[in-house]
Amino acid sequence: MTPRFEDIFGKSILAGIFSLLAAVQISAIAGMLHASDAIERFGTTIVAKAFTLIFLLMTVVLTVKRLPPKDSAAGIEPRVTAITGTFILMLLAFVPPGATSAFVRLLSAALIVTGTFLSIFCLYWLGRSFSVMATARRLVIQGPYAYVRHPLYVAEAVTTAGVVLLNWSISAAVIGVVWCVFQYRRSVNEEAVLCSAFPEYDEYARTVPRFIPAPTIAGKKRARRSAAATS
Image 1 (spheres, helix red, strand yellow):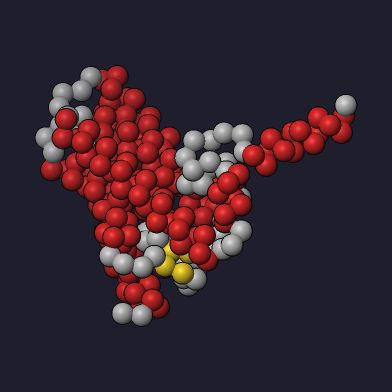
Image 2 (cartoon, one colour; image 1 turned 180 degrees about the horizontal axis):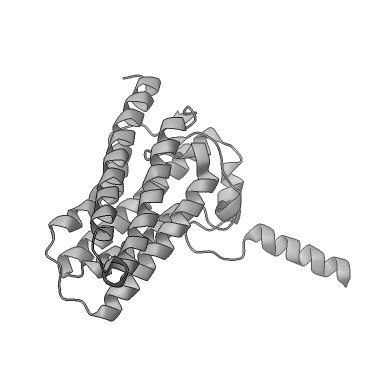
């Protein structure tokens, strides 16, 4: 399978899956809005699902319009890791949830809305460079990518925390931890490809943290130069 054929084939499959998930969200929102007391009963849930719908529609559009690959990870492991990391949370639909309080449900909804909003923001900056697989298309280091190398995964982690809380059980917690492991591995695979495709990525990786926002080396250097200039 040539890289170009794999990219087109993967694009078609992923766009179809994300479109199906978007249709499920639309159906769920419509069902909730049909209730006479929809806002009172499902207000926060509707908002969370609406943000999720926007995110899914963006993934469909960006998957279809994404740039051609400059380089992709070799072997089966990066592909299995990417697919598992993307869809493993769907297993929560088959896990019996534990009892949660009204406060926990409200907190989970807040985390889901916040994380999904941040994911939408990251997708906006990632644009046509968006990929599920470990693929280099265009180097993005602006916007949230100026503060951490994988802001989309950080945003998705916030959403995942909310989803796990909403479906709280030991099994749900285990699925959440496994998701984190696969996402970390995805970041390693992606960085290997980006380093290969873009020589400047190595310097970027040295100055910008992987997940946790912190003052970068470059920022510290600018601060020192500014202090020296005013002294």
